[in-house]
Image 1: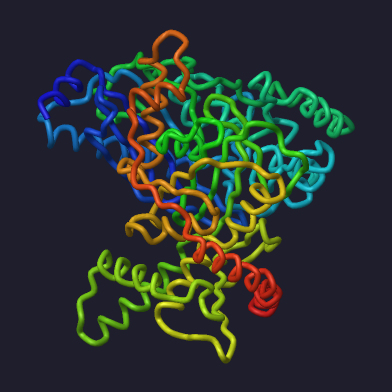
Image 2: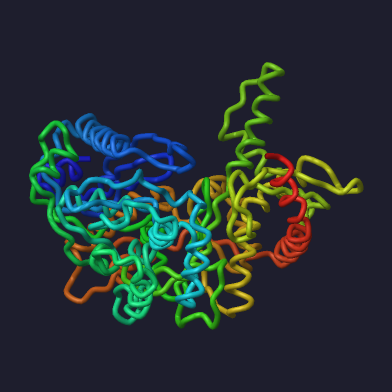
Length: 531
């Protein structure tokens, strides 16, 4: 504790802040890269005129409250104030669309990654580029606005992501880390910059509109991990810390997306490594050794914070339906006068799932609270279905819902691992699904048929990963790669708890996924019938 206090007094602590879908969290780390203070602010997106959005007011109120709670945590633990920092990094939900005019005014409300309103644009750009452009990517939002004939497009001076917006307002720099930029527009792995051929193709596509800009003029500048991305301005310091105690001048690292911070937090930036983040949504990242042979709409190609190509499977739904069923069991227990401890309830039900049949005994569940692009659904309806002769019991029921939370991810990963023959040495799991030891981890191992590791530090999550990227910028040795920095100075050989796939579990998941795919027609019918 005395070391942490001195680090803070000396101005050597490093701050990472991440804007997640439901929480903004700040993590302050010391010189050993371990968290020494934190703060959080809960928030929710709003559906306004059919668009999922967060207001600018909510963004700044949330950031200031989050920072204030971190500073209060420092004061309470160590009896000192935060007045200067060694480095800062911001990350956020990837993709989305924030467009500004020459005066820096927001032209239309923030369109988040969650919107599925760009299908026409995404399909057209995928065809034009011969490169998969998902609906949530920033360029799909821009081109859809072009196709819609939206008046604001001609007045765009700059467009960016949430992390890019925060960084710009605090430093004056219109930049992005390459991993975050790769969710706006395709990156050329050789140049670590936007793909020139594709930017030129886009400019030709919109040329008949006679806009006063070229695409590269309105995109943020791309930086790789370790580069300096500007310093906290006087105005920026006041925006971040409303008490005025924080001094300006702190260097900021390139702002990144939540995918990049997940890779940093799990030490999975090296070729052949992968990680799965499983919470409200779920995504898998596998760092590629070579380009894929074909274009797959189920696979996004993004990059690590250093610019190496990553295949990403992103699914909108993961634990929401599973959590809803556990809450139903809590309500049942409370109806009988039993107080249900949620940690114990989750743990007990998860472990019960391990007693179930490997193929779930004829039970199938769909966890689709929202649409799922991997399986071609623009809307979702949570659904549980079984054959009349199915083995219907609690163990199979829970196993089915655990399988369902990773089923769509498996469909996407099967394309990568089986069709494209990509080899992954080990997958790191992080997020709420892995909180109960050995359950979600084992099911993921069965899904990917590869070893799955869960690190002790994985629970620290994205803001910690962002703090590591900021630490790398100010503390790296000459020529030291991010991979080496993380491996030798942060994780130092930590391998975590590793689970190998059990052949019987893998075969059982394969049998389940076959039925799951065949029953998708029922899920589609439910979407149509339940308006």
